[in-house]
Image (cartoon, rainbow, N blue to C red):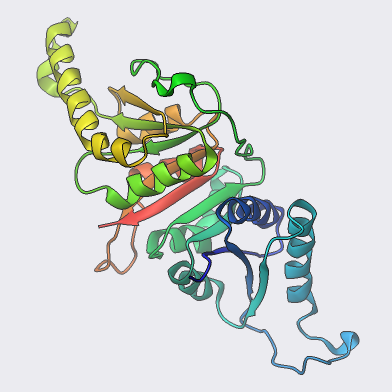
Length: 304
């Protein structure tokens, strides 16, 4: 059986170097091969014994070698593939996403201008990729490997803030979420940490009265939503019995619920519906909010 491949896209930035370290940790955890990819449309074809002073690809090689050195310092025995590709970055990254278990990219800061620059390539790749894409910021907290919850009992579902290392996944319950939940449970199981499942749903109009929220109506709606969430998770909890699960239900928009719950998490997992017929696919409001406002690594998982 061939080992999985985790690909990280390199562009010479500090963000892509941090992404390479994160991807190396993930490859080490999974026993996977790490592929360090740098795409440059002007990559020149030349003989392997070309003298250094005549090497037209010297910058591209430096980008990959710097990432290799950084990764080797953390995981000296990790299997690494250095890959220089003569193509547009977006095309090369989209192909890599099809061939890899994960595609990992660096994500810049959250200012309006830098987010716009990020959108030229990274967000377009996230919106079009056939496989999961993880965006890692240069200041992202690491994913520590912490102990499981003692006794395997989940914390109080009413508690929003969860302390300690964990994976957070946002679910909508509006359609099939097999790939999303499989990815999230697998990530939590591999790290030996809690999985916090977050569902945001604003109260319907009938809950409100002229003087505020009707507590009885709100309780009825909340109970129904909690039951839906429990039913959706039951098969996955049976499949991953060692993963402690925290259910978090918030009476807020899905995007705001996910951003709020992800504070302090090691990894956030969100879904993106495939939109093959659109000339310019979008990533959706929840993934968009996560990518721009969450500081931890964000995995965007495409699903039908």
